[in-house]
Image 1 (cartoon, one colour):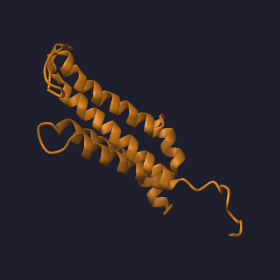
Image 2 (cartoon, rainbow, N blue to C red; image 1 turned 90 degrees about the horizontal axis):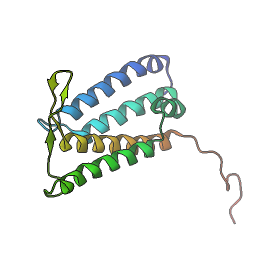
Image 3 (cartoon, rainbow, N blue to C red; image 1 turned 90 degrees about the vertical axis):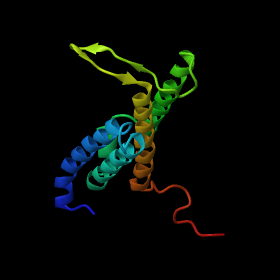
Image 4 (cartoon, one colour; image 1 turned 45 degrees about the vertical axis):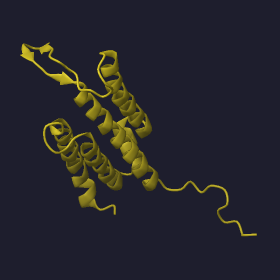
Length: 148
């Protein structure tokens, strides 16, 4: 489906869906939502963009290979758990710090860093699957050969 309407509206829909996915990610540890569903929304946005403009446009837009994004998210989630061990508490325990940023105390926690890691894993892996499904086969060996 490569219509003019879809190609015109896809960038706007993609931007709104990505913004909404970040909203769902950030509210996730207090209310329903979080890294997993936020990542699915973001991957869906990238899939819509890919349907409209092709997988090459998505790869250029995200700038990194999707599996590299998933790997970075997995590393961030693992580090979020290991920080608690370094602090002498059980693995995956939530820890908070309260830095003063521009005169405002901002609570940061290992919980949100874990959620961001999950978000990146889901975005990377689902986007990799979607791009693989959208990519045309390259006409590998065996095409046009008779059985036997």
